[in-house]
Image (cartoon, rainbow, N blue to C red; front, side, top):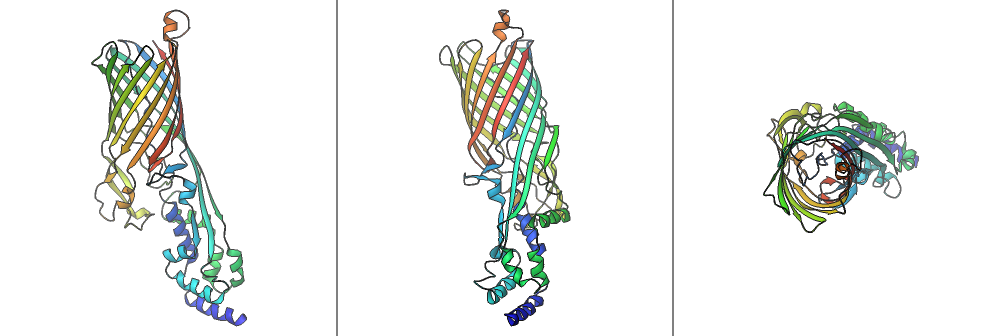
Length: 429
């Protein structure tokens, strides 16, 4: 056995250029890339509106919401997976050889001098990336009825984004290979590799921020809304809702893989809804919507090719980005049990086209455009309690509404499983 170790040492030293510790850190980061790019749709602060305010009546409100479920995502095939399962990677011999062809020599050598194909079974373990992003928001809003058919409003969202991230290295069989320690500095480096530390070091060397917990509060993109009612009669009417979103939120950050890079967007959304009173207490409202984004100039890291999943800081370039067109169709069913209490259910289906970028000077945007098209199906239930009519009857102290909504994205493609709760308290005057 001693003779085998001497021969093995000579072969390994001959290939001393195998920097396995560095190669494995690169592999770890390759798997980490893009897992943190949360792509959930920006919340429309004003929910689907089926009525306008009376002339010269104002409404001020506070909308408070929480979005969870962002650690799960519907894949391109529509399968629901966790970010942990999707982005963790096993560092076995095959993976090592794929990213570092010279490592094949090490694997073959270990196969010849170890037992039970020791090279093929070499495994540094699995790097598990466990992320738990969540978003909370609060938006003061103000609306006024310019006349009985036209209402305008504005909303200023304050966003709190948190993401608790943990990286772990597990299920390694390095202990078996300790018997070969000392035969090669490269093998020793591989055995000593801490995938978590190596990943952080590689990120910093390429100009990225280290992976760490996030907790940020900031003003999001301000929204201006117009509601116009037309073709109205006793039982039905149409509402045209126009929402203009202004780019007041944080700009795209190409250095933070955990950044919530969905703000600083200029968009225009049009929704046409038709409300029809089926009987004295049930109203049905089908709707269709279209959201267009104005192209935005932003600094991005451009991959040199489709294998460059972690472009370095020299790849930064200012490009014109065009978000894909959003389309939604759905219906809301509202039960008004009395003047004070009602329940609404909403079902909607939406799609988003792929994002597009202007042509870079060097490299290709194919990788960052990939899988940016989305589909989603969402169901919501809202409970509403109104004290307006009881106030007019002098039976309550304030003319106000309180509503609570829960919603779930129960199907989709390339989109996070958004589950949300929203509380709205509004006062009329």
